[in-house]
Amino acid sequence: MNLENKKQIAIIILAVGLGLVASVGTGHYIQTRVDQETAKISQEFENKKVKPMMREIDSLRKEMQKLASMQAATATKVQEQKPSELPAVPKSSLALRTPAGKRAYTVRIDSLSAVGGLVNPGDYIDVIAHMDIPDPVSNSNQNVSSMVFQNIQILAVGTNLQAPGGYEQQQTARALNITFALTPEEASLMSFIEKHGRMQLILRAPAETETEIIQAASWSALADYVFEKQGTELIIPKERAVIQPVSTGRVDEVKPFIQIFQGGRSL
Image (tube, rainbow, N blue to C red):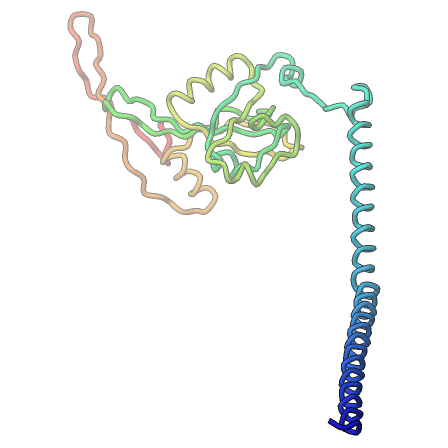
């Protein structure tokens, strides 16, 4: 190999070496730039997204800590509060509300018969009794409706001693426990009525305190009322004549007994 060829080979080897060095340098430069740009983009994202979010979370944490501190302080204050500082709960006694000379008597009555449940403690009512009265002659019961009490005070409806009461609950209830202020005699009679009939309440106006004599409701009483108020004569069932035994001193003889009625009234 001559000298000229050796020079060409040396030049080629040198060029290849320089190319390799340049290639390595270029790759290192590119990798460095990629790392710099990645770090730059990551920093920008953190500044725009992450840091505001972290600040928001930190602010929320502080608010929750503040609220927890306030609740703890309130609970401590309530626990340290003296009993005398607590609001007084009003109490009432049924015995103290019962008028002198009266007795508190409770009856259970269906809501509809108690003026539809629209009654309050302190109201005054009249009481109508519907009873089946035994008839010894016909050996059957005779249904009678009569006003038995007037101007009776209501002391309580259920456990409510205050007015007004809960109308919605009373109207939806099937029955109500109503406590009246009664004299001992009235209480005894009301107990008798409970066992032998049923009661219906009539609400009075606050200024209405008078009482009046009212005859028991019957077919004849209804006929008289309609004839007097409306001028209409009702055809009512005729009562059968009652035959009563009459004593003669020796033996009991049965004599006919005739009772005469005019206008629904006995003569």
